[in-house]
Image 1 (cartoon, rainbow, N blue to C red):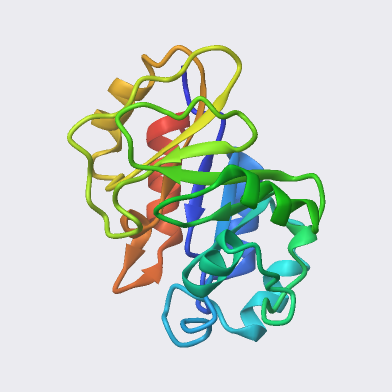
Image 2: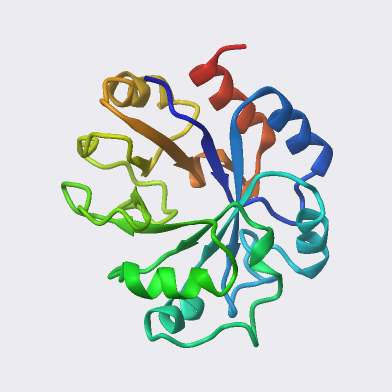
Length: 214
């Protein structure tokens, strides 16, 4: 079974809207935007205000990936509405990147923005049984490190994700394993689709062609 879609995380200041629109018209893709109060606009992976404005009005399928102090405050049950630079209601999904995620806290936060699906990360050998969020297996955290093994899909109609060191160079081998999974899933790519720490649409296209065909 092929993935339902691929999330390409880390669109940035140099990403051309035309290029990602063209890709989205041909393939089932989602674009992840990284958010961190300390890194926004300074770290290449965290787009500045001008880039965010372009993305927010693009009509593309996007997910918000909340990192750093945002995720810590969410886990503490605090609001981030005073510091988050965009309306999260525009996103198809919201991912909270925290080493010890609490689904109840994530859902409580999500409810303040809409009814989009929420995503939490897991590093365990098996996916959690909680179904209130979509679980993404990710031990890499954007560092491009591949796991030694991928956890089995939990079965049923659940949608789960796989991330960690996936790139156009190794995606064929990764898919030979993941396509054997007995249920719905997506894959997430971040470091593997960057060149000189800039989002590389050519690598995204190569990944899509390898998974879905030309």
